[in-house]
Length: 121
Length: 350
Ligand code: SF4
Ligand code: SF4
Picture 1 (cartoon, rainbow over the protein chains, first blue to last red):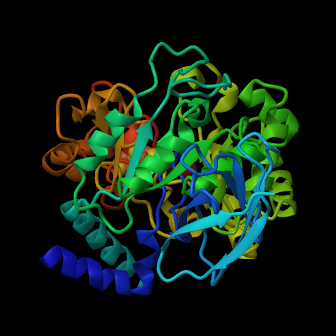
Picture 2: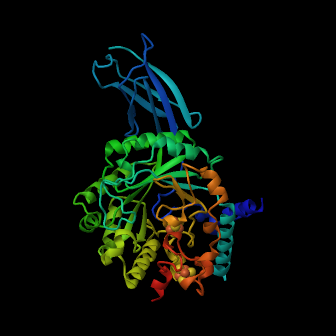
Picture 3: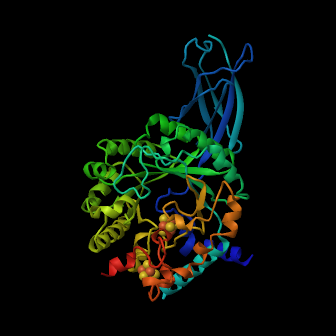
């Protein structure tokens, strides 16, 4: 389509390239798409049951999330070459007492799904 | 000569964008509740607004009609104050699951460490925080003695994130105009990278408060301040998209004036109405998500936004700048649409 052709041509010209990044008066800047989705399930190694209330944190950022009643956690985070993650049982014996564990994930694309098992204390 | 061709090319570009009308930026007015009671609030929202928040599922059904979504498509959560919604993180997560990115505009009052973490977890990619002056003038406009401290904390948190595209917006008025250099210093001290300035138009509560509206001379001074500060390259400062500013056009923004309302910008308002920017007069409403297919409305309606010849009326009719301005921002046309509410260019000329 001619309009799209013109658009691509104009996009290539530095004089107008900025105009594709815009914001309305009461709006925000553009999302620059610098994130990665990580989702996982935390289970007890001995029984395979999901564990609720585990604090899952990315050690190189301030981000953390707690597992829900299915043992699931998920978050979007910065794009990086590897993700050191820490799993801590912060609620004491409330959902069983488990040992702290850490792991490092390597991203292959923009989404990571994984499962991790914790040992009882 | 270069300017002449650049302007010609830019006009061509704008016409082309209107023809393609790719939806890139969808506002969702997700709540009308607000925790502040700002003097300039154009939408007259209040703590106990009578409109209920829009249920998330209703918005998601409308969002699902937009297929395919453009590469740059994003949802901008606005209000009211979006953080008044208890399910705001869930809203963000679901919007991502439905194939869109999202961002938010906030007054920062409820934006603490925990909220920051939860919103990042939910995939928020951009954020705008309102800051209308240093402590005294911000608190005056925001009508709350703690609002500056809260906004200041929100700015620190936003700044700590490496992936959040974040800016500060300042609503310039008679009380804070002299303070702009101080606000600038403050923002540099907070390592803020981007700062957007806009002015208040005489509608909503602002219409009855002359202290909020800049004089023509102050308006020109503000543009001069933006222009001078841009040359320093210390912060990405710009005038908002709100209006055409004639001889300042190339000096106060990255690109020329282009009101993209209804061309790239749409909105779903609190009652399901489909419009362009949320600050646009409700007489421009094009449909309602509760009775119409959002994307069909976007594709088939919105003619008033894409062909602006109708704005060649009132003072715009014989204007020599009409080709570049095209009747200014759509939010400046109200009621019978017989004349534009504000001509920014005229303020400069005076
Ligand atoms: S008179 Fe109308 S078209 Fe001319 S500069 Fe003012 S707002 Fe724009
Ligand atoms: S209607 Fe106003 S806020 Fe919206 S794009 Fe146009 S000038 Fe900007």
